[in-house]
Image (tube, rainbow over all chains, first blue to last red; front, side, top):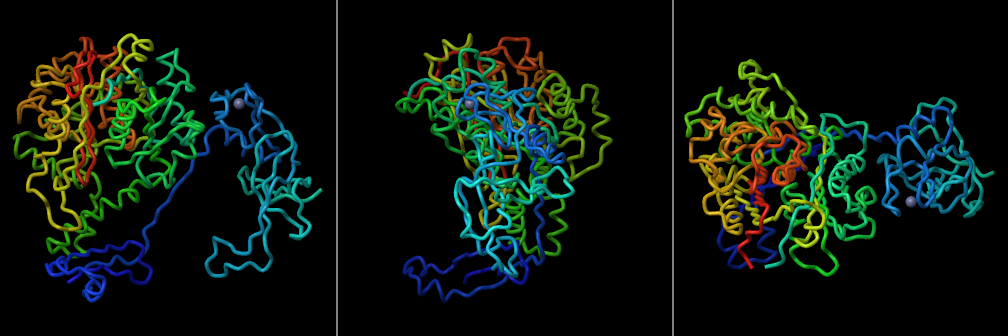
Length: 189
Length: 415
Ligand SMILES: [Zn+2]
Protein backbone atom coordinates (compact mmCIF):
# COMPACT_ATOMS: atom_id res chain seq x y z
CA UNK A 1 0.00 0.00 0.00
CA UNK A 2 1.13 3.49 -0.70
CA UNK A 3 0.15 6.36 1.54
CA UNK A 4 -0.10 9.65 -0.21
CA UNK A 5 -1.10 13.06 0.95
CA UNK A 6 -2.84 14.65 -1.95
CA UNK A 7 -2.89 18.17 -3.20
CA UNK A 8 -6.35 19.70 -3.09
CA UNK A 9 -7.80 23.07 -4.03
CA UNK A 10 -5.48 25.86 -3.04
CA UNK A 11 -3.05 23.75 -1.05
CA UNK A 12 0.51 24.84 -1.28
CA UNK A 13 1.85 22.87 1.63
CA UNK A 14 1.55 19.21 0.77
CA UNK A 15 3.11 16.20 2.27
CA UNK A 16 3.69 13.08 0.28
CA UNK A 17 4.44 10.00 2.27
CA UNK A 18 5.08 6.82 0.36
CA UNK A 19 5.84 3.64 2.22
CA UNK A 20 5.98 0.20 0.73
CA UNK A 21 5.29 -2.72 2.98
CA UNK A 22 5.06 -5.41 0.32
CA UNK A 23 8.37 -7.17 -0.02
CA UNK A 24 7.38 -8.42 -3.50
CA UNK A 25 7.60 -4.89 -4.74
CA UNK A 26 11.27 -4.98 -3.94
CA UNK A 27 11.79 -8.45 -5.34
CA UNK A 28 9.97 -7.84 -8.62
CA UNK A 29 10.09 -4.14 -8.96
CA UNK A 30 8.73 -2.64 -12.15
CA UNK A 31 6.82 0.41 -13.21
CA UNK A 32 3.53 -1.48 -13.70
CA UNK A 33 3.46 -2.72 -10.11
CA UNK A 34 4.31 0.72 -8.86
CA UNK A 35 1.28 2.15 -10.61
CA UNK A 36 -1.27 -0.19 -9.00
CA UNK A 37 -0.29 0.88 -5.48
CA UNK A 38 -3.24 2.46 -3.71
CA UNK A 39 -3.19 5.96 -2.34
CA UNK A 40 -4.61 7.28 0.89
CA UNK A 41 -4.82 10.85 2.11
CA UNK A 42 -3.30 11.18 5.57
CA UNK A 43 -3.02 14.90 5.97
CA UNK A 44 -3.99 17.87 3.87
CA UNK A 45 -3.35 21.41 4.87
CA UNK A 46 -5.76 23.66 3.03
CA UNK A 47 -4.97 27.28 2.57
CA UNK A 48 -1.91 29.28 1.77
CA UNK A 49 1.41 29.52 3.50
CA UNK A 50 2.53 33.13 3.44
CA UNK A 51 6.14 33.82 2.65
CA UNK A 52 7.12 37.45 2.96
CA UNK A 53 10.56 38.65 2.02
CA UNK A 54 12.25 42.02 2.14
CA UNK A 55 15.38 42.94 0.24
CA UNK A 56 17.59 45.56 1.80
CA UNK A 57 19.16 47.54 -1.00
CA UNK A 58 22.03 48.78 1.15
CA UNK A 59 23.50 52.28 1.38
CA UNK A 60 24.80 52.60 -2.19
CA UNK A 61 21.52 51.65 -3.83
CA UNK A 62 19.59 53.66 -1.26
CA UNK A 63 21.38 56.82 -2.40
CA UNK A 64 20.69 55.84 -6.02
CA UNK A 65 16.94 55.51 -5.43
CA UNK A 66 16.81 58.65 -3.30
CA UNK A 67 18.14 60.57 -6.30
CA UNK A 68 15.21 59.26 -8.37
CA UNK A 69 12.96 61.45 -6.23
CA UNK A 70 14.64 64.49 -7.81
CA UNK A 71 14.64 62.77 -11.22
CA UNK A 72 18.41 62.35 -11.15
CA UNK A 73 20.56 59.37 -12.07
CA UNK A 74 23.64 58.73 -9.91
CA UNK A 75 26.52 56.43 -10.65
CA UNK A 76 29.79 55.73 -8.91
CA UNK A 77 33.25 55.43 -10.39
CA UNK A 78 35.92 52.82 -9.70
CA UNK A 79 39.00 54.74 -8.53
CA UNK A 80 41.26 52.25 -10.35
CA UNK A 81 39.79 51.34 -13.75
CA UNK A 82 37.44 54.34 -14.01
CA UNK A 83 34.36 52.26 -14.83
CA UNK A 84 31.15 54.04 -13.86
CA UNK A 85 28.45 51.83 -12.35
CA UNK A 86 24.71 52.41 -12.69
CA UNK A 87 23.36 51.39 -10.24
CA UNK A 88 26.27 52.28 -7.97
CA UNK A 89 28.02 49.45 -6.10
CA UNK A 90 30.46 48.94 -3.27
CA UNK A 91 32.97 46.70 -5.05
CA UNK A 92 34.48 46.80 -8.53
CA UNK A 93 34.74 43.07 -9.33
CA UNK A 94 37.22 43.66 -12.14
CA UNK A 95 39.72 45.44 -9.88
CA UNK A 96 38.67 43.76 -6.60
CA UNK A 97 38.65 47.06 -4.77
CA UNK A 98 36.12 48.92 -2.68
CA UNK A 99 34.64 52.17 -3.92
CA UNK A 100 34.33 54.33 -0.78
CA UNK A 101 30.81 55.42 0.03
CA UNK A 102 31.73 59.07 0.55
CA UNK A 103 33.61 59.49 -2.73
CA UNK A 104 33.51 58.88 -6.46
CA UNK A 105 29.84 59.72 -7.04
CA UNK A 106 29.00 60.83 -10.57
CA UNK A 107 25.93 62.80 -11.69
CA UNK A 108 24.73 61.35 -14.95
CA UNK A 109 22.26 62.56 -17.59
CA UNK A 110 18.95 60.74 -18.12
CA UNK A 111 19.90 59.86 -21.70
CA UNK A 112 21.55 56.71 -22.96
CA UNK A 113 22.11 54.19 -25.74
CA UNK A 114 20.06 51.06 -26.40
CA UNK A 115 22.53 48.14 -26.26
CA UNK A 116 20.09 45.26 -26.71
CA UNK A 117 16.41 44.46 -26.45
CA UNK A 118 13.73 41.79 -26.55
CA UNK A 119 10.06 41.80 -27.48
CA UNK A 120 7.77 39.97 -25.10
CA UNK A 121 4.26 38.69 -25.87
CA UNK A 122 3.41 37.27 -22.42
CA UNK A 123 3.27 38.69 -18.93
CA UNK A 124 4.80 36.56 -16.24
CA UNK A 125 2.97 38.13 -13.33
CA UNK A 126 -0.64 37.73 -14.42
CA UNK A 127 -1.83 34.18 -14.83
CA UNK A 128 -5.39 35.14 -15.81
CA UNK A 129 -4.52 36.88 -19.04
CA UNK A 130 -0.93 36.21 -19.81
CA UNK A 131 -0.99 37.10 -23.47
CA UNK A 132 -0.59 40.85 -23.89
CA UNK A 133 -2.60 42.83 -26.45
CA UNK A 134 0.42 44.83 -27.50
CA UNK A 135 3.88 43.29 -27.29
CA UNK A 136 6.21 44.97 -24.83
CA UNK A 137 9.75 45.91 -25.71
CA UNK A 138 12.31 45.57 -22.94
CA UNK A 139 15.65 47.23 -23.52
CA UNK A 140 19.11 47.22 -22.01
CA UNK A 141 20.14 50.84 -21.80
CA UNK A 142 23.62 52.19 -21.16
CA UNK A 143 23.23 55.57 -19.47
CA UNK A 144 25.57 58.12 -21.10
CA UNK A 145 28.79 58.30 -19.14
CA UNK A 146 28.40 54.86 -17.53
CA UNK A 147 29.88 51.42 -18.30
CA UNK A 148 26.91 49.26 -17.32
CA UNK A 149 23.34 48.73 -18.50
CA UNK A 150 19.96 48.96 -16.81
CA UNK A 151 16.84 47.20 -18.01
CA UNK A 152 13.56 49.03 -18.58
CA UNK A 153 10.63 49.12 -20.99
CA UNK A 154 10.85 51.04 -24.23
CA UNK A 155 7.76 53.24 -24.64
CA UNK A 156 5.87 54.65 -27.62
CA UNK A 157 7.69 52.63 -30.21
CA UNK A 158 6.78 49.81 -32.63
CA UNK A 159 9.03 46.72 -32.72
CA UNK A 160 10.12 47.41 -36.31
CA UNK A 161 11.36 50.89 -35.36
CA UNK A 162 13.74 49.66 -32.65
CA UNK A 163 17.40 49.80 -33.57
CA UNK A 164 20.36 48.79 -31.42
CA UNK A 165 22.60 51.79 -30.64
CA UNK A 166 19.70 54.23 -30.92
CA UNK A 167 19.66 57.12 -28.44
CA UNK A 168 17.01 57.00 -25.72
CA UNK A 169 15.83 59.15 -22.81
CA UNK A 170 14.20 58.41 -19.45
CA UNK A 171 10.46 59.04 -19.03
CA UNK A 172 9.94 59.87 -15.37
CA UNK A 173 6.71 59.38 -13.46
CA UNK A 174 5.06 62.71 -12.64
CA UNK A 175 5.17 61.98 -8.92
CA UNK A 176 8.36 60.24 -7.90
CA UNK A 177 8.68 58.10 -4.78
CA UNK A 178 12.36 57.19 -4.69
CA UNK A 179 11.99 53.64 -5.98
CA UNK A 180 12.60 51.77 -9.27
CA UNK A 181 9.07 52.48 -10.54
CA UNK A 182 9.92 56.20 -10.80
CA UNK A 183 11.30 55.41 -14.24
CA UNK A 184 8.36 54.58 -16.50
CA UNK A 185 10.68 53.57 -19.28
CA UNK A 186 12.75 55.00 -22.13
CA UNK A 187 11.72 56.73 -25.37
CA UNK A 188 13.66 57.21 -28.59
CA UNK A 189 15.16 60.65 -29.09
CA UNK B 1 46.21 12.15 3.20
CA UNK B 2 46.86 15.62 1.91
CA UNK B 3 49.10 18.40 3.11
CA UNK B 4 48.87 20.32 6.36
CA UNK B 5 46.36 23.15 6.41
CA UNK B 6 46.45 26.30 8.51
CA UNK B 7 43.95 28.99 9.35
CA UNK B 8 45.69 32.32 8.74
CA UNK B 9 42.83 34.61 9.70
CA UNK B 10 39.13 34.91 10.46
CA UNK B 11 36.76 37.85 10.44
CA UNK B 12 33.22 38.95 11.17
CA UNK B 13 30.68 41.52 10.13
CA UNK B 14 28.86 43.34 12.85
CA UNK B 15 25.76 41.36 13.83
CA UNK B 16 22.34 42.79 14.64
CA UNK B 17 18.71 41.81 14.31
CA UNK B 18 18.35 44.01 11.25
CA UNK B 19 21.31 45.04 9.11
CA UNK B 20 19.13 46.97 6.68
CA UNK B 21 22.02 49.36 6.03
CA UNK B 22 23.68 46.75 3.83
CA UNK B 23 22.51 44.31 1.19
CA UNK B 24 23.58 40.69 1.38
CA UNK B 25 26.76 41.01 -0.75
CA UNK B 26 27.81 44.08 1.24
CA UNK B 27 27.25 42.23 4.52
CA UNK B 28 29.49 39.41 3.28
CA UNK B 29 32.15 41.87 2.11
CA UNK B 30 32.34 43.32 5.65
CA UNK B 31 33.38 39.94 7.07
CA UNK B 32 35.96 39.50 4.31
CA UNK B 33 37.41 42.96 4.99
CA UNK B 34 37.73 42.14 8.70
CA UNK B 35 39.35 38.78 7.88
CA UNK B 36 41.92 40.18 5.42
CA UNK B 37 42.69 43.22 7.60
CA UNK B 38 44.39 40.84 10.08
CA UNK B 39 46.79 39.56 7.40
CA UNK B 40 48.06 42.75 5.71
CA UNK B 41 50.25 40.93 3.19
CA UNK B 42 47.25 39.15 1.65
CA UNK B 43 44.95 40.90 -0.79
CA UNK B 44 41.77 39.42 -2.15
CA UNK B 45 43.66 38.86 -5.44
CA UNK B 46 45.85 36.27 -3.67
CA UNK B 47 42.91 33.99 -2.96
CA UNK B 48 42.77 30.98 -5.26
CA UNK B 49 39.33 29.54 -4.51
CA UNK B 50 36.16 30.25 -2.55
CA UNK B 51 33.71 28.21 -0.50
CA UNK B 52 30.43 29.89 0.37
CA UNK B 53 27.26 28.91 2.21
CA UNK B 54 24.07 30.01 3.92
CA UNK B 55 20.70 28.44 4.69
CA UNK B 56 18.66 27.68 1.58
CA UNK B 57 15.58 29.89 1.11
CA UNK B 58 15.78 31.79 4.41
CA UNK B 59 16.18 35.12 2.64
CA UNK B 60 14.16 34.04 -0.38
CA UNK B 61 17.30 34.47 -2.47
CA UNK B 62 18.33 31.59 -4.62
CA UNK B 63 21.98 30.86 -5.49
CA UNK B 64 23.25 33.93 -3.61
CA UNK B 65 26.88 32.88 -4.07
CA UNK B 66 26.66 33.65 -7.78
CA UNK B 67 25.37 37.17 -7.54
CA UNK B 68 27.70 38.15 -4.69
CA UNK B 69 30.75 36.88 -6.61
CA UNK B 70 32.30 40.35 -7.12
CA UNK B 71 31.74 41.28 -3.48
CA UNK B 72 33.81 38.25 -2.40
CA UNK B 73 36.57 38.90 -4.96
CA UNK B 74 35.67 35.62 -6.63
CA UNK B 75 35.19 36.78 -10.21
CA UNK B 76 36.53 34.12 -12.60
CA UNK B 77 37.79 31.94 -9.73
CA UNK B 78 36.71 28.50 -8.48
CA UNK B 79 33.66 28.87 -6.24
CA UNK B 80 31.35 26.36 -4.64
CA UNK B 81 28.45 26.63 -2.24
CA UNK B 82 27.72 24.22 0.60
CA UNK B 83 24.50 24.28 2.54
CA UNK B 84 23.78 21.72 5.27
CA UNK B 85 21.19 23.40 7.50
CA UNK B 86 22.40 24.55 10.91
CA UNK B 87 25.86 23.13 10.30
CA UNK B 88 26.28 25.08 7.03
CA UNK B 89 29.07 27.25 8.45
CA UNK B 90 30.90 24.22 9.87
CA UNK B 91 30.60 22.41 6.57
CA UNK B 92 31.84 25.47 4.67
CA UNK B 93 34.87 25.67 6.99
CA UNK B 94 35.55 21.96 6.50
CA UNK B 95 35.11 22.57 2.75
CA UNK B 96 37.83 25.23 2.95
CA UNK B 97 40.12 22.79 4.76
CA UNK B 98 39.47 19.98 2.24
CA UNK B 99 40.13 22.33 -0.70
CA UNK B 100 43.58 23.20 0.64
CA UNK B 101 44.56 19.74 1.88
CA UNK B 102 43.60 18.25 -1.50
CA UNK B 103 46.72 19.81 -3.12
CA UNK B 104 44.84 20.90 -6.22
CA UNK B 105 47.13 22.56 -8.76
CA UNK B 106 47.20 26.31 -8.26
CA UNK B 107 44.96 26.26 -5.20
CA UNK B 108 46.83 27.12 -1.99
CA UNK B 109 44.76 29.84 -0.38
CA UNK B 110 41.02 29.47 0.11
CA UNK B 111 38.49 31.87 1.56
CA UNK B 112 35.49 30.29 3.29
CA UNK B 113 32.46 32.51 3.79
CA UNK B 114 29.22 31.84 5.65
CA UNK B 115 26.39 34.28 6.22
CA UNK B 116 22.74 34.91 6.91
CA UNK B 117 20.62 38.04 6.64
CA UNK B 118 17.53 36.74 8.38
CA UNK B 119 15.79 40.11 8.58
CA UNK B 120 15.23 39.95 4.83
CA UNK B 121 13.28 36.76 4.98
CA UNK B 122 10.86 34.64 6.84
CA UNK B 123 12.82 32.15 8.87
CA UNK B 124 9.69 30.20 9.71
CA UNK B 125 9.08 29.66 6.02
CA UNK B 126 12.66 28.55 5.68
CA UNK B 127 12.09 26.12 8.51
CA UNK B 128 8.94 24.67 6.89
CA UNK B 129 10.94 21.57 6.12
CA UNK B 130 11.57 21.21 9.85
CA UNK B 131 7.84 21.53 10.53
CA UNK B 132 7.36 18.82 7.93
CA UNK B 133 9.48 16.47 9.97
CA UNK B 134 7.37 17.12 13.03
CA UNK B 135 4.12 16.69 11.12
CA UNK B 136 5.13 13.37 9.73
CA UNK B 137 6.40 11.92 12.99
CA UNK B 138 3.35 13.05 14.95
CA UNK B 139 1.15 11.56 12.25
CA UNK B 140 2.68 8.19 12.82
CA UNK B 141 1.91 8.61 16.51
CA UNK B 142 -1.76 9.03 15.64
CA UNK B 143 -1.98 12.77 16.25
CA UNK B 144 -4.41 14.41 13.88
CA UNK B 145 -3.69 17.54 11.95
CA UNK B 146 -6.09 19.63 14.07
CA UNK B 147 -4.24 18.68 17.25
CA UNK B 148 -0.99 19.02 15.46
CA UNK B 149 -1.38 22.70 14.52
CA UNK B 150 -1.52 23.48 18.23
CA UNK B 151 1.55 21.41 18.96
CA UNK B 152 3.41 23.21 16.19
CA UNK B 153 3.01 26.57 17.86
CA UNK B 154 6.43 25.94 19.33
CA UNK B 155 7.63 24.39 16.11
CA UNK B 156 10.94 24.48 14.33
CA UNK B 157 14.17 24.67 16.33
CA UNK B 158 12.71 25.36 19.76
CA UNK B 159 10.21 22.53 19.30
CA UNK B 160 13.15 20.19 18.96
CA UNK B 161 15.24 21.79 21.68
CA UNK B 162 12.54 21.70 24.34
CA UNK B 163 12.28 17.88 24.13
CA UNK B 164 16.04 17.74 24.23
CA UNK B 165 16.12 20.09 27.23
CA UNK B 166 13.68 18.01 29.29
CA UNK B 167 15.56 14.84 28.35
CA UNK B 168 18.81 16.40 29.46
CA UNK B 169 17.39 17.87 32.65
CA UNK B 170 15.99 14.50 33.68
CA UNK B 171 19.32 12.82 33.04
CA UNK B 172 21.54 15.36 34.75
CA UNK B 173 19.13 16.50 37.51
CA UNK B 174 19.61 20.19 36.77
CA UNK B 175 17.18 23.04 37.34
CA UNK B 176 15.97 26.00 35.33
CA UNK B 177 18.33 28.12 37.37
CA UNK B 178 21.23 26.09 35.98
CA UNK B 179 20.02 26.84 32.45
CA UNK B 180 19.76 30.55 33.25
CA UNK B 181 23.33 30.56 34.59
CA UNK B 182 24.63 29.43 31.19
CA UNK B 183 22.67 32.23 29.50
CA UNK B 184 24.06 34.85 31.88
CA UNK B 185 27.66 33.76 31.20
CA UNK B 186 27.05 33.91 27.45
CA UNK B 187 25.40 37.32 27.40
CA UNK B 188 28.14 38.77 29.63
CA UNK B 189 30.75 37.41 27.23
CA UNK B 190 28.83 38.81 24.25
CA UNK B 191 29.02 42.25 25.85
CA UNK B 192 32.81 42.14 25.34
CA UNK B 193 32.67 40.83 21.76
CA UNK B 194 32.49 43.67 19.26
CA UNK B 195 30.51 41.80 16.61
CA UNK B 196 28.04 40.02 18.93
CA UNK B 197 24.29 40.67 18.89
CA UNK B 198 22.73 40.33 22.38
CA UNK B 199 25.08 42.20 24.70
CA UNK B 200 23.76 42.16 28.26
CA UNK B 201 26.57 42.99 30.70
CA UNK B 202 24.20 43.33 33.68
CA UNK B 203 21.95 40.32 33.12
CA UNK B 204 21.23 38.19 36.21
CA UNK B 205 19.82 34.69 36.68
CA UNK B 206 16.71 36.23 38.24
CA UNK B 207 16.19 38.41 35.13
CA UNK B 208 16.26 35.34 32.90
CA UNK B 209 13.84 33.42 35.12
CA UNK B 210 11.35 36.29 35.05
CA UNK B 211 10.83 36.01 31.29
CA UNK B 212 7.87 33.94 30.02
CA UNK B 213 8.12 30.38 28.77
CA UNK B 214 8.12 29.78 25.03
CA UNK B 215 8.14 26.02 25.36
CA UNK B 216 8.93 24.47 28.74
CA UNK B 217 11.65 24.60 30.05
CA UNK B 218 12.88 27.24 27.62
CA UNK B 219 12.01 30.83 28.40
CA UNK B 220 12.10 33.86 26.15
CA UNK B 221 15.24 35.10 27.89
CA UNK B 222 17.07 31.82 27.25
CA UNK B 223 16.79 31.47 23.49
CA UNK B 224 19.08 32.82 20.80
CA UNK B 225 18.19 35.90 18.77
CA UNK B 226 17.74 35.87 14.99
CA UNK B 227 20.71 37.80 13.63
CA UNK B 228 22.05 39.23 10.41
CA UNK B 229 25.75 38.61 10.00
CA UNK B 230 28.64 37.03 8.15
CA UNK B 231 31.90 35.24 8.93
CA UNK B 232 34.99 34.54 6.82
CA UNK B 233 37.97 32.23 7.37
CA UNK B 234 41.22 32.11 5.46
CA UNK B 235 42.72 28.63 4.94
CA UNK B 236 46.14 28.15 3.40
CA UNK B 237 49.17 25.90 3.33
CA UNK B 238 51.54 25.58 6.28
CA UNK B 239 54.34 27.35 4.36
CA UNK B 240 52.22 30.31 3.33
CA UNK B 241 50.56 30.65 6.73
CA UNK B 242 53.98 30.95 8.41
CA UNK B 243 54.67 34.00 6.21
CA UNK B 244 51.26 35.54 6.74
CA UNK B 245 50.79 35.46 10.49
CA UNK B 246 52.65 35.04 13.77
CA UNK B 247 50.69 32.05 15.00
CA UNK B 248 49.32 29.87 12.18
CA UNK B 249 46.50 27.67 13.45
CA UNK B 250 46.77 24.09 12.24
CA UNK B 251 43.60 22.21 11.43
CA UNK B 252 44.42 18.86 12.97
CA UNK B 253 41.09 17.09 12.76
CA UNK B 254 37.62 17.48 11.32
CA UNK B 255 34.47 15.44 11.73
CA UNK B 256 31.05 15.66 10.11
CA UNK B 257 28.52 13.08 11.24
CA UNK B 258 24.86 12.75 10.30
CA UNK B 259 22.73 10.90 12.78
CA UNK B 260 19.22 10.96 11.36
CA UNK B 261 17.61 9.17 14.24
CA UNK B 262 18.85 11.87 16.59
CA UNK B 263 15.45 13.48 16.76
CA UNK B 264 12.98 12.11 14.26
CA UNK B 265 12.89 9.30 11.78
CA UNK B 266 12.81 9.85 8.07
CA UNK B 267 9.39 10.44 6.51
CA UNK B 268 7.46 9.70 9.64
CA UNK B 269 9.11 6.43 10.47
CA UNK B 270 8.93 7.35 14.15
CA UNK B 271 11.31 8.78 16.68
CA UNK B 272 14.61 7.01 16.20
CA UNK B 273 15.47 7.13 19.85
CA UNK B 274 13.87 7.86 23.17
CA UNK B 275 16.41 10.30 24.52
CA UNK B 276 17.29 13.19 22.22
CA UNK B 277 20.02 14.32 24.59
CA UNK B 278 21.94 11.10 24.00
CA UNK B 279 23.67 12.58 20.91
CA UNK B 280 25.58 9.68 19.44
CA UNK B 281 26.35 11.86 16.40
CA UNK B 282 28.20 14.37 18.55
CA UNK B 283 30.15 11.61 20.24
CA UNK B 284 31.04 10.07 16.89
CA UNK B 285 32.13 13.37 15.29
CA UNK B 286 34.28 14.11 18.35
CA UNK B 287 35.81 10.64 18.16
CA UNK B 288 36.66 11.17 14.47
CA UNK B 289 38.11 14.65 14.87
CA UNK B 290 40.04 13.90 18.08
CA UNK B 291 41.31 10.66 16.53
CA UNK B 292 42.77 12.54 13.56
CA UNK B 293 44.26 15.17 15.85
CA UNK B 294 45.86 12.58 18.13
CA UNK B 295 43.92 13.75 21.15
CA UNK B 296 43.25 11.03 23.71
CA UNK B 297 42.13 13.09 26.71
CA UNK B 298 40.05 16.03 25.46
CA UNK B 299 39.38 17.24 29.01
CA UNK B 300 43.13 17.71 29.56
CA UNK B 301 44.27 18.59 26.06
CA UNK B 302 41.63 21.11 24.97
CA UNK B 303 42.19 24.65 26.23
CA UNK B 304 39.17 26.36 24.71
CA UNK B 305 35.87 25.33 23.12
CA UNK B 306 33.20 27.01 21.05
CA UNK B 307 30.07 24.85 20.81
CA UNK B 308 26.90 25.51 18.85
CA UNK B 309 24.18 26.10 21.39
CA UNK B 310 21.24 28.35 20.58
CA UNK B 311 19.67 27.01 23.81
CA UNK B 312 21.49 26.75 27.16
CA UNK B 313 20.67 23.07 27.76
CA UNK B 314 22.53 22.27 24.54
CA UNK B 315 25.68 23.97 25.73
CA UNK B 316 25.77 21.71 28.81
CA UNK B 317 24.94 18.67 26.72
CA UNK B 318 27.52 19.27 23.98
CA UNK B 319 30.47 19.88 26.26
CA UNK B 320 29.74 16.53 27.91
CA UNK B 321 29.07 14.60 24.69
CA UNK B 322 32.16 16.02 23.01
CA UNK B 323 34.23 14.63 25.87
CA UNK B 324 35.22 17.88 27.54
CA UNK B 325 33.53 16.99 30.84
CA UNK B 326 32.22 13.90 32.56
CA UNK B 327 28.55 13.15 32.05
CA UNK B 328 26.19 15.22 34.24
CA UNK B 329 28.94 17.51 35.52
CA UNK B 330 28.72 20.39 33.02
CA UNK B 331 26.33 22.50 35.06
CA UNK B 332 28.69 22.36 38.04
CA UNK B 333 31.47 23.74 35.81
CA UNK B 334 29.43 26.90 35.21
CA UNK B 335 28.74 27.25 38.92
CA UNK B 336 32.40 26.95 39.85
CA UNK B 337 33.68 29.16 37.03
CA UNK B 338 35.65 26.48 35.16
CA UNK B 339 34.00 27.53 31.87
CA UNK B 340 34.34 31.29 32.45
CA UNK B 341 36.69 33.61 30.55
CA UNK B 342 39.44 33.16 33.14
CA UNK B 343 38.53 29.55 33.92
CA UNK B 344 40.40 26.33 33.30
CA UNK B 345 38.40 25.45 30.16
CA UNK B 346 36.60 28.54 28.88
CA UNK B 347 33.50 27.87 26.75
CA UNK B 348 31.92 30.24 24.20
CA UNK B 349 33.69 33.43 25.22
CA UNK B 350 32.22 35.09 22.12
CA UNK B 351 28.80 34.76 23.75
CA UNK B 352 28.13 31.79 21.49
CA UNK B 353 25.11 31.09 19.34
CA UNK B 354 22.98 31.84 22.40
CA UNK B 355 23.88 35.52 21.96
CA UNK B 356 24.35 35.76 18.18
CA UNK B 357 22.70 33.53 15.61
CA UNK B 358 23.03 34.35 11.95
CA UNK B 359 22.17 30.73 11.25
CA UNK B 360 24.24 30.00 8.14
CA UNK B 361 27.26 31.69 9.72
CA UNK B 362 26.91 30.33 13.27
CA UNK B 363 28.65 26.98 12.78
CA UNK B 364 31.61 28.76 11.14
CA UNK B 365 31.83 31.38 13.84
CA UNK B 366 32.65 28.56 16.30
CA UNK B 367 35.95 27.42 14.67
CA UNK B 368 36.64 31.05 13.64
CA UNK B 369 36.53 32.26 17.26
CA UNK B 370 38.45 29.21 18.46
CA UNK B 371 41.21 29.89 15.90
CA UNK B 372 41.44 33.55 16.91
CA UNK B 373 41.70 32.50 20.58
CA UNK B 374 44.75 30.41 19.64
CA UNK B 375 46.24 33.37 17.73
CA UNK B 376 45.54 35.68 20.68
CA UNK B 377 43.42 37.92 18.43
CA UNK B 378 39.89 37.12 19.65
CA UNK B 379 37.56 39.94 20.57
CA UNK B 380 36.98 38.63 24.11
CA UNK B 381 40.41 37.03 24.44
CA UNK B 382 40.93 34.57 27.30
CA UNK B 383 43.85 35.49 29.58
CA UNK B 384 45.51 32.07 29.46
CA UNK B 385 47.46 30.79 26.44
CA UNK B 386 45.30 28.63 24.19
CA UNK B 387 47.21 25.85 22.43
CA UNK B 388 44.40 23.59 21.28
CA UNK B 389 40.74 24.46 20.72
CA UNK B 390 37.60 23.06 19.13
CA UNK B 391 34.80 24.54 17.05
CA UNK B 392 31.56 22.56 16.92
CA UNK B 393 28.39 22.88 14.82
CA UNK B 394 24.88 21.48 15.18
CA UNK B 395 22.10 21.17 12.66
CA UNK B 396 18.66 19.76 13.31
CA UNK B 397 16.13 18.26 12.75
CA UNK B 398 18.08 15.66 10.90
CA UNK B 399 20.92 15.69 13.32
CA UNK B 400 24.20 16.75 11.80
CA UNK B 401 27.32 17.60 13.75
CA UNK B 402 30.51 19.27 12.53
CA UNK B 403 33.76 19.42 14.46
CA UNK B 404 37.08 21.12 13.87
CA UNK B 405 40.09 20.60 16.14
CA UNK B 406 42.74 23.30 15.85
CA UNK B 407 46.13 23.87 17.44
CA UNK B 408 49.21 26.06 17.24
CA UNK B 409 51.25 22.97 16.29
CA UNK B 410 50.68 20.21 13.73
CA UNK B 411 49.47 17.00 15.37
CA UNK B 412 47.41 15.50 12.54
CA UNK B 413 47.84 11.75 12.65
CA UNK B 414 46.57 10.68 9.24
CA UNK B 415 49.14 10.66 6.49
ZN1 LIG C 1 37.67 48.89 -11.35
